[in-house]
Amino acid sequence: MGLPLQSIVVKCKQEYKNDEDPLGDILSMFRASPFSLNMFQQCPRQYKFQYIDGLKDIYRKPRPYFTMGNHVHATLKDFLSVVPVDERNLSKLENLLREKWRRYRKGFNDREDEKRWGGKALNQLRRFAQNQDISGTPFLVEDYHSVELTDTILLKGRIDRVDKEADGSLHIIDYKTGKVPEEINQTQLHIYALILSKKQNLPVRKASYLFLEAGEFRTLEPTAADLERAASYVIDLVNRICMEREYPATPNNYCGTCDFLEICPRKEEAVKLTINEDELDF
Image 1 (cartoon, rainbow, N blue to C red):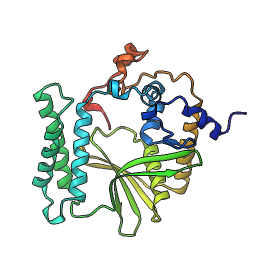
Image 2: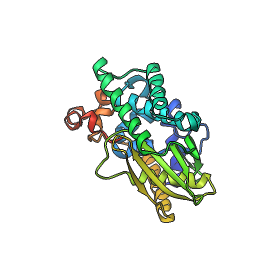
Image 3: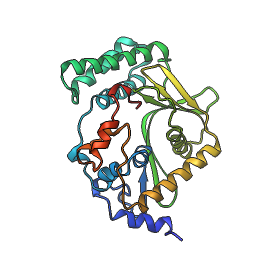
């Protein structure tokens, strides 16, 4: 019979560096997020380097797709929450992007590379302005949420946007600046719906990815059973994380985005699997 989760989590705490400790200041709470859980699922060794060994600040490198993605997200946040409705237009959206871009321009190989990624960002925002309703005011924009899933797990996440539908229900929208994948990550949307359902009295009826490059929605309608499965998924995965001792490196298509590739024990295999930056789906 294994240890109870409370004991596992307390034992787990001793392994983390202070600045990346997912248990935070409360001894008994393990802080989990869709991002960190997905990282562990994708590659336990990457999770260990970032959250247990605390190597993020040493090895972190600016990446063009992250710079572009961050600027697009920040632009849409301000456009929909700060700019008055009667001032919202394509010109305003483009100017907001340019303002943010001037403040941070790292991660590009050269000026031509920067121009190419800047063009991608502009095209995505132009498509957004042309195809989406820009006159509405979202219920929530780029908010961080955290809920106590159990006595030992604090589940947190940043939700890009939440709209209030005509029937009073909520619609979660997560922006994606990469390619539309063959199969979407339903678990992430279900976790967001789980978090929001515990923070709001209004029902969460829809959860969507909006792929800005394609201008396409991929929408789910979460059920109570979906949220129960999401909760079980988080609890089981936290248990696995705290019981893990080897944290094996797991080469995959996203290794090229990993900050720790140079110290990866399976670097030679990982490099061979890396896909083109333009094919990334986040």
